Image (cartoon, rainbow, N blue to C red; front, top):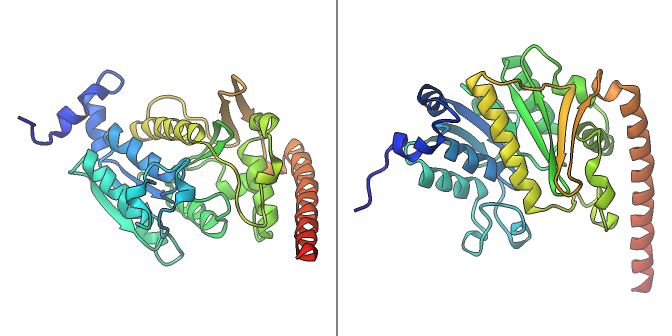
Length: 302
C-alpha cells in the first residue's frame, strides 16, 4: 500500500545535513524565481526536493523543441504548454503541500511588488538577454533587503554571485545604468565570470549571436547551476555557513577541472574589469560586422 504524503517522511533523508529544526525552517521559507526556462525550472524542482515550502514562480513562455537540451520541464508531452504551469505541477507532484503563486505573464513593473511580497530569497532564472526587468528586480530586492542570487550557466560549469542586504548591490557591481542593451550584455557576461574558465573550449564562436539573442548551452551546466543555487539558498535561508557576496564570486568548470574564487572591488569599475569590457566590446563589434557581412552575402546570392 502506498502511504499518503508526509512532509517529514518525504524529506527525512535531508536530515543529517540539516537538522529537523532547520528542515522546518525550509518548510516555512518562500523563494521567488523569475524565469522557468534553462535554470529557473530546475531551481524550483531542486528547492522543492530540499523541502522549501513556498514559491513565487514567473514565466510567460511555452515549451518548444529547442528547449529539450537543457530545460527540466521540456518534453514531448509538454510542447506548447506554459512553462510556469508545468514547473508548478512538478513542484506539487514532489510536495502536494507546497504553497505556489504563479505569475503567468512573467514579471514586469506592475507585478514586481506582488512577486517579491513576503519573499525570503530571490533567485534569478531570467534569460541572459532580459535586461530591463532583471535590473528592476534586483533593485527592488536591494530596496526590500531581500537576498538575491544569480548563477550563470557557462560551458559545462557555472558562476555564482550573491547580493546580500547591506552589501554591494547588483547595480553597483554591474554598472548598467541606462546603457544600451549590447553594452549591458558585455558587462553582464564579464561581471558574471571574471575568471572566464569556459572560454577556452568554445569550439564554434558563431553559436554566440548577440543580434539574435542566443547562445550555446548544456544540461551539465544547468544542473550544476541548480546545485550551486540551492546550496546558496540553504545557507542564506538557514543563516549558516559563509556566504560569499559580491564583489566576491565563484566559477566552477568541470571540463577544465578548475574552481576560481574571484574578487573585483568596485565590480565593473575595477580596472581589470574595465579592460575585459573593452576587449569584449571590440569582440562584439567584430561579431556584428561578420554577421552583417554574412547576411549581405546571403542576400546577394539570392
